[in-house]
Amino acid sequence: MPLSVVDLYRDILPKTNCGDCGFSACLAFASIVVSEKLPLGNCPHIEAGVIENCQKELDEQLCF
Ligand code: SF4
Image (tube, rainbow, N blue to C red; front, side):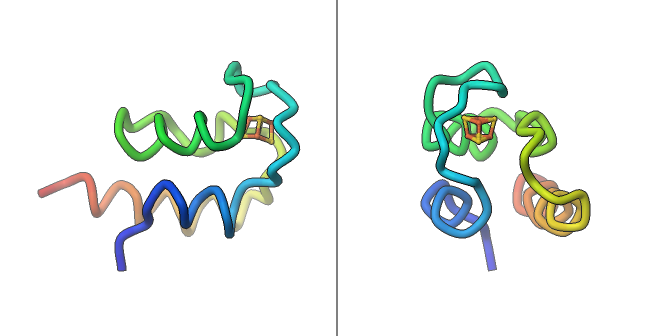
């Protein structure tokens, strides 16, 4: 099932809006990950295994 911006924000991102990824809010980061293919790993606060699984799904949904 495709991962949406809301899925990423709600289920994956820490929602701390810390800014370490270069965006001022997790929701903005999620939006760019989905629309511009920014790597999910640019957020340093997600477990490696979660990044791996989600990135695989994101990569597949972006290859039409
Ligand atoms: S680094 Fe992660 S937790 Fe911090 S604002 Fe970006 S997406 Fe949110």
